[in-house]
Length: 341
Ligand code: 5GP
Ligand code: MN
Image (cartoon, rainbow, N blue to C red; front, side, top):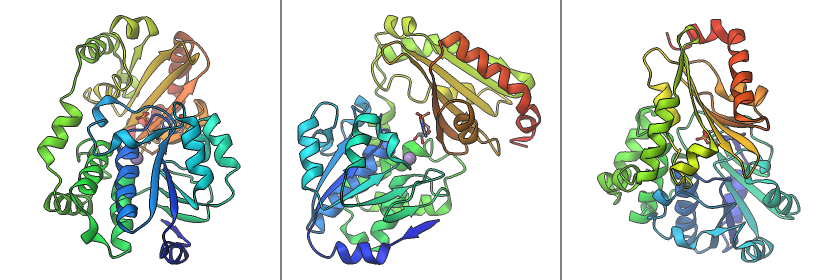
C-alpha cells in the first residue's frame, strides 16, 4: 500500500477547491462508480467537483445517479479542457498511469500545472504528488469508501454515494466472488445497504439489461470458444463481421471472457475482439490463482491490469494475434498447471 501526502491533501481540502475527477478510457463500473461517488462526497464537503472521462461508457451504467452530467473528453472537448484549466487539483481514479486515458487526453494532462491525486488499485502506479494506491483492495470504489472513512466522513455517505460505490465493488469483484472480496469488502457492502444502496435493483440495473444484440454476440462468442486442456487455457474470438452482424454496441462484450474462464479446469482465459476502425485487436485476459495476466499482458500485448484481470491490444490481425498467443503458451505450461491448485 502507498499512502503519500495524505495529511497535506486533507489540509489542502480544508478550503473549497475546484476539482476535476478523471476515470480511465472505456470506463467500467468501478471507474464510473468511483468518480461519481467521489464527486458527490466532495460536493458535500463544499468543493466544486466535475467528472471527466475520455470516452463513452456502457448503457448499463447510465442509470447511475447524475451519470448524465459526466463530461466526455472526446465529445465535450472544450468543456472538459475548460474544467481542467479552471481546476485547482485533479483526482485520477481507477488507473495507474496517464496513458490509460488515451493519447489525446493524456497530452492535455501532461501539461497540467497543478497536483494530481491518485486513488487506484492497479499494479505499478506512476508517481504523483498525492497517492492512495493498494493492489490488494477489490476496487477503486472500495478505496473511495475507505478514503471517506479516513477523513472521518462516513456519515456523509447517502443513497447516491452508496449506490455508486456498491456498483463499482460489485462489478470489479464479479459480484463478490473474486479472491479480492474480503470480509472488509462484505462489511463495507453491508454498511452501504444500511446507507441506502438497494442491492437487488443495482444488480438488475447492471446485469439484467441484455439487448438481443448482446445475446447474439454471446452466442457467436460461445461458438468460437476454443479450449486448450493441455495448458488449462480457453479463449474466445469475435471478428468485426460477427460484431456487425449482431449490431454491436459498446459494452456488449463486457464479461464474455468469463465464460472461457468458467470451463472446468481452465485457469487462463482470453477474448480477442477485432476492432477494424481502430485497426487493433482488443484483448481481455483473466486467470485463476497465481498466474499473472498483468505480466502476460504487459510482456506481450502492450497492456496490463491486475494479477487475475488484465487487458491489452495487438496491431496484428485477429488470426495472427491468436497464433502468437498460442505460440506463447508452451513457455507457461508449468505455471498454468499449478496456478490454481
Ligand atoms: P478489461 O479486460 O475488463 O477491459 O480490463 C481488465 C483490467 O485490465 C482492468 O483493470 C483494466 O483497467 C486493465 N486493462 C484493460 N486494458 C488495458 C490496457 O490496454 N492497458 C493496461 N495497462 N491495462 C488495461
Ligand atoms: Mn477497478
